[in-house]
Image 1 (tube, rainbow, N blue to C red):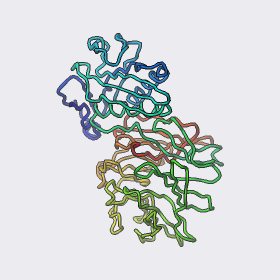
Image 2 (cartoon, rainbow, N blue to C red):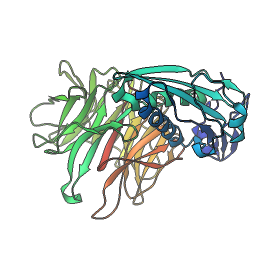
Image 3 (cartoon, one colour):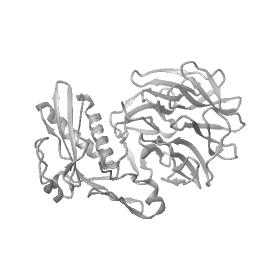
Image 4 (cartoon, helix red, strand yellow):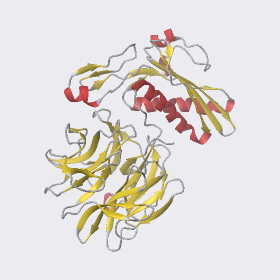
Length: 441
């Protein structure tokens, strides 16, 4: 099976500034020219309703699929107004000449049926110029309430088929929803689909909440709450919206928590007696292990995907920088050496890169670097960009951007790791501290 994007990646053309055409054995093609990718033209006609009750879902599912694919910046939809052929049956022969005439290099067709509250989606992708079906011919079933999720699953399958990478559309984001004036912000935890749909609120705004983080299986969320008057770590079951406090002991403040890849351990910062260090805690037993012991401030820890290392921020060198150490503690090595201050590091799910926030010369940036600190690249710049989080496939980063002035507010944005396709993520109110879930099970 042909992969058109293979490693679309990052570095090759974007970093070197060279022109690179992806070598192909056929006509489907994505070109990288000095970091600019020519989007692949595709068509997704409205899916065919196979039962009367399916009519309201068929068009909506096709529109979500189109929004997912076009939103990556790697695909460009051929609008329905340009279509020559009309797809009236899922098993009908494809008129490839009609799709070639409108320059659609890929075609996605599908059918929807509804029986009671059960909805079934069948779909198939086609390589128009090679005149053949792709391998992504699948069927998804679920409740009618979950129609958007099934659309995301279809888009993930098509994206994976064409790019050779796993998708990220069937995922969620937990974040801090913000309302009210800048000097009296009300904050509560919210969860949404990756594209801003289906927002649900997990806490009220009675107390400040910060830094929510998903478990590796996406069923729990860690966050910091000031409900008791000082910061404490809470863990919340997303499905049942039940929570408990992970106590770090009397007279201590705990914050910046993050799950280990095994989901059984939490790493976090704890302040006691004016000193802030990193600790790990077994969630089941509450047993704690001290990981750092220095007069400096250690915070914002993040595990490598294999659980063997932790990246964190520290001012032990005199300014805020990034360090990597073994997950059980031990000697840390500095990995950030550029100008400015570095913070909020997050290890990529691929294990090959670390995203971070950088402050330099009055500007904030979201950037990425290799895990040894090499190949640093800044993706954004603004008055205040902070708090990066990775999509499950390691291709896209979401972050919070706050606008300047007394009326400024924080909103969510996403950007490709090449620095392309910077765009806002729609939320009902202001939003900060995003954390991306793994793909849903």
